Length: 394
Ligand SMILES: *Cc1c(COP(=O)(O)O)cnc(C)c1O
Image: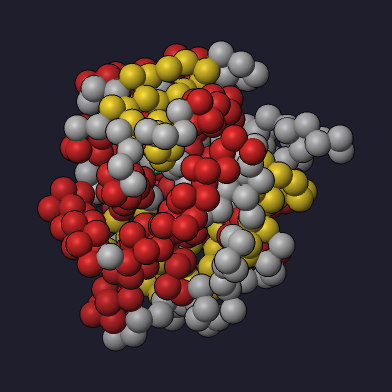
């Protein structure tokens, strides 16, 4: 059985390793999140916004040309069609409603590529709440369109100037802010990472993905279970959402796709399940890429959403226990899939999601298998990268 205990552990992974100063904030959340999420008026408002604002349920689409090519029944769960273009909005809507019920007047968030920053700025605008997004100085330069979106939505983007000036430094800045503003501020974490209860809370908000898959598959195939679910894993929130209601249905294979960057052994990679070891990062015990003396190794992937040195504790447990099968995909393989899927199905996937499609080239399956790929986001944000490499692939 895959479950989380009351201290926030999945097996040996998880927990809450936080500075003393953060204790009141995290403890408040831990005590109240389940009660709030279970409240009828909360559920009603959450479901209504998912339907009317985000556009849920997202379709489950039988991709016929991909199915013919790969000789299996391939369904795409269309999170790319959500408002703001990815799954991240499911979680930010949930957390803003929770923050309101906790009486918080100020929201902070961290962002790498800017997708979570945009999703957070969006829901803060929706609710008229002040929003501050921490972002590495390097990422601010690399992801200008998303910085512009956040500004347009009324958020303040604060540069993180320490370390490598990327996601992990932005996360450190956000944590520092939270320590200094414990009373009025809620920190919206964007993936199934961080101290308990964040991994469980984010997984529950994203679980709407597999909740819809159950009835959509029953409708379209005659049974709730697919044979295989494939999702990319950065921190692991879209994968957690796609797996959630299938975690304890052992007959459903779960494939976790990580970014190998220039190659798993190249020194430029983000394949945490292969390269990682047990350690503590951003408040939880999980697998992370570190030197023998515990310094974090800078990850690399062409995809900013997968460029993280750890994975969420749920995924560390799923992989270590053998419940999920890890697959590593290089930049080059992901790019090839992005062009292929675009031209086979008329859907331009996000670079992160392109990694998930590449897994079809790596795993074994049968021609009778029903395979669901979680199409976590659309590729508009990646067009510049796609066009830059286009000639090499055509
Ligand atoms: C952020 C992002 C990811 C990676 O984050 P997870 O928490 O692992 O889901 C994947 N796909 C898209 C489109 C993203 O924006």
